[in-house]
Length: 346
Picture (cartoon, rainbow, N blue to C red):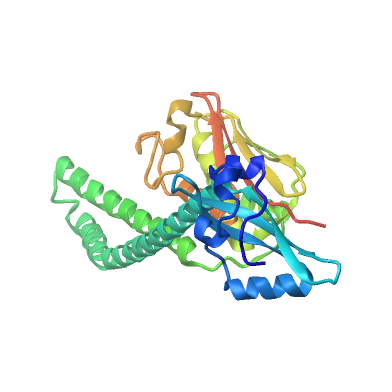
C-alpha cells in the first residue's frame, strides 16, 4: 500500500522497458511519473470503498517516452480484511488515443472550414442579391428607352440601325431574365425549407400544366410513371420539376415528336430516386460536370434560349434536401436527369 513495486511480469517489461530486477523495490510514482485524470486521493478513496478502480493514465517508459494505458486496479486484503496491496493491470492504448486526437483535430478543422464556408456563402448570397437589385433600375432605363427609340425612330433609321436597336432591346430582356433567375437562385439559398409530406404525383401534374404553354403547336408525348411521396419543401420541389420539365421541353424542340418521361428509378426506406428523361439533343458526357454550374451552358444561346441557372437551381434545392443530382446523356440521343430525396417513411 506504500506504492512500492513487489511484482513485475514479462508484459510489464515489454511495455515499459525495465526488467523485473530494475523495477521491483522502486516507488511506482517515481518510476513512472504517472499523470492521473483525477486527484490520486480520489483514486485511493474509490479503491478502498469499492475494491476496484479503472481509468486512463499517462506514464513514462524507460526510454523517456510517454505511454497512455487503460489501467485497472484491484485491492488485495489480508485475513483480517486489512488493505494489503494493489494489483495494477495496464493495456497500451497510446496508438488509439493518438488516432482519437487526430480525428478530433480533423473535426475541429472541418468545423472551422465549414463555418468559414458558410460565412462566405452568406456573403456571396448577399452580394448576388444586392447586385441583382441594384442592376434593375438602370436596366429598366436601358430597356424602356431602347423600346421607345425603336418605336419612334424605326422609320428614320436604316436596316442596320434598326438591327442595332433590336439587339439592344433583346439583350436588355435577356439581362432582365438573368437578374430574375439570379434573384430566384439567391432566395433559395436564404429561404427556410418547410419540409412536410409531399405528393410527387400531384407536383408533377402542376409542373406539367406550368410548362405546357411552351409546347403549344408541338407534338409532345408525355409519360408519367408511378411517383412516390417524399419528404421535403413543396414549393422548392415544385421548382425542381418545373425546371427539369422546361429543360426537357426546350431541348426536344428540334424533334418531330418529343418524348418526355417522368418516373421513379428506385426507392428504398431512406431515399427515392426520380428521373426526367427526354429524346432531345442530349450532351457530351465529358462536359457533365458543367451542367449544374451557374451560367454554364453547353449550347449556343442562338440555338436554345436560357440563362444557365435552371439546373444550378435544381442542384441547390436537392442539396438543401440532403439529396444528390446527376445526369446521363449522349449527343443527339437525349438526356436523363436524376435526383434523390429523403423518402416518406410510413
